[in-house]
Length: 323
Ligand SMILES: NC(=O)C1=CN([C@@H]2O[C@H](COP(=O)(O)OP(=O)(O)OC[C@H]3O[C@@H](n4cnc5c(N)ncnc54)[C@H](O)[C@@H]3O)[C@@H](O)[C@H]2O)C=CC1
Ligand SMILES: NCC(=O)COP(=O)(O)O
Image (cartoon, rainbow, N blue to C red; front, side):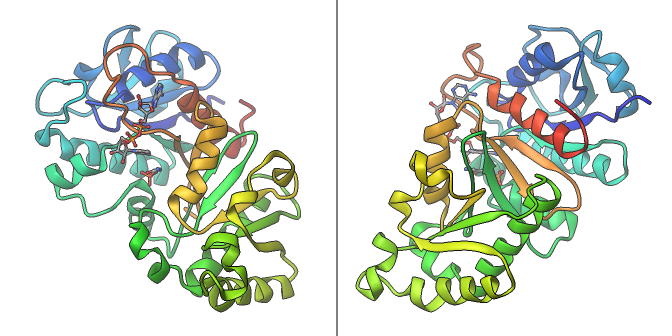
């Protein structure tokens, strides 16, 4: 039986998404079919593309060119310069990918990067990122952003939250929910029978016994004690500054960090080229490259497709493939 394709939303046309789609097709065309949802006129044309009326035709078409489910946008692609008139199309591509995976026409979705400000300005997009938008579209209670590579898996508990607002956003309920979702996904989607999780503190030195902050004592430790009593293998709260060196990384399957940069700086430093962003807790698989729209190099041919290729491969493995 022909495998279902992965549905790829085009992301911001002014970013590197269109060239990444072409480069990934050139690498994966025979082994991992995907269908790109976007405006064919925005593709650079370095490789052929094939417009397909239905995603079921993507695996066959992939031998001849990049399979495309067309979505017409207003205007041409201008690398580095997002067009307000195109913002609604960017959102529609994500919605289309979700509809395809929900109807069983695609096996997973993989999203190319959006420019959050361009979507807010051009489409009144009210979500800080895909993660929150997908949670909304799927009707999920809560989801988790995980960044994963060969060397590290890491989860920020608070996600797209201004640093000044993190202490208020970091509640015991949120921490517990995000640990539970991560633990369950490591078992069911990453085949780790007994996941080991290492949890960072929020403050320097994990609060130094209350001398440098109280969130560890008042919020983090009580949650960890409760979940340990259920049998979860949890350590922490750890000082975040010593949680990511090589020896420390051998002691856990995923690190739970308290805010965006605490989680993403280590993995992007270790593995920027091959890190993958995966949303856990959705009723379908969603992956994404770890980087953004890279306006500074869009249209120059310098974009490295490795993270996007890894994102497609991870989506494939998480849906039973062997890529
Ligand atoms: N999943 C998503 O939709 C994501 C979207 N973004 C959005 O992207 C926009 C730009 O974010 P930045 O912080 O500037 O990060 P960025 O990842 O777009 O760029 C940071 C630096 O890395 C380089 N870079 C990024 N990807 C590359 C690639 N594949 N090959 C070679 N060089 C690459 C860029 O040229 C730039 O110098 C923002 O609007 C942000 O919100 C950021 C991360 C993820
Ligand atoms: N820095 C990671 C990021 O912004 C990805 O967000 P999302 O669009 O995948 O929610």
